[in-house]
Image (cartoon, rainbow, N blue to C red; front, side, top):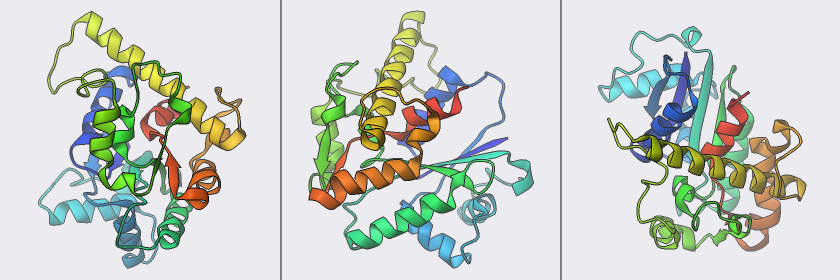
Length: 253
């Protein structure tokens, strides 16, 4: 049984359901739930729990307090893997940038193993980076970066920058039975996104815009360190990068 923990309650679960349809077996017992706040609030929650990395028990209590029984009756031992998806959101005005980066580093070190505490994936700057492209495949994707100030309105920026008017090129609608043509079109677009984001991550970490030699080359802490070194600490910008295509690359055998 796999647990997916998302920051948001709308966009991320919708993205995941399309990924599940494309890449996961039809019969699975995966569980999805939403934390409902950003990674820095999750950090505060972990501190309140004494730094305990048992995200299953923590999410179970959080959801129960909301009246959400998604994890009712589920024990930590029932979960074989945990994946968390959160945004970098370094435009957060509640914290200074150095504190944002310190907390992110702590969280990436805490959640570095899907069969242990869980594995954390980070969107730069946020999940809407999934649509920050021109027509797919976008050969210029490796160049795209945004400043910290631009991230205050990144959702609008991504919408206006995108070649596509909606998310229909990469997402199935709830309950949709797509034609074979649409299914293949969405599958091809996700394959493009996987190649683009994985290659860009490799460019950040290894300096080469190509698929990495090994999956471990583009681990999440290495990507974060490279973002800090090349962009964040240089001019308070960040290279646009989405974690869902990288997760697909990591997860598929």
